[in-house]
Each structure stands twice: as structure tokens, then as C-alpha cells.
Image 1 (cartoon, rainbow, N blue to C red):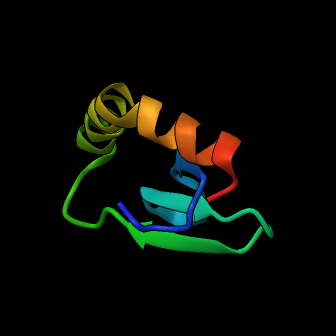
Image 2: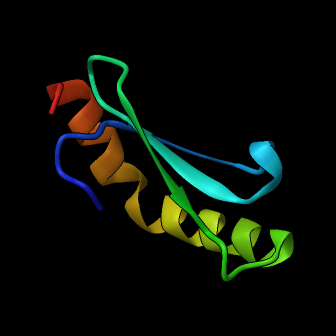
Length: 64
């Protein structure tokens, strides 16, 4: 998890599975999930969000 990012989004646009992280200024970092097929990437995303949603939420409301 990257410090300073408050919004996490997973998607498969651009032809590959990846995670986008956005900071409070709207800047983003794209992390490819290249070793995973779409099904594996979806499972990874679900597990990550289920395990870390509270941290992501706290960072969002604190503006970190």
C-alpha cells in the first residue's frame, strides 16, 4: 500500500488488469497486475478491498 493515496480502483481497461491509486489532488499511479489473468485479478482485488477497505476509508476522510 502506498502512503498518500486515498482512492483505490481496480479495472481492466487499457487491455490489462491493474490497480489505480489516486491522491487528494487527483494524481494517479497505475500498478499492472500482469502476472494475473482477469479472474485472478478480480479475486486479488476482492481480497485486497475486503482486507484493507477500512484503511483506505480512513485515509480518504483524513485526506492523507
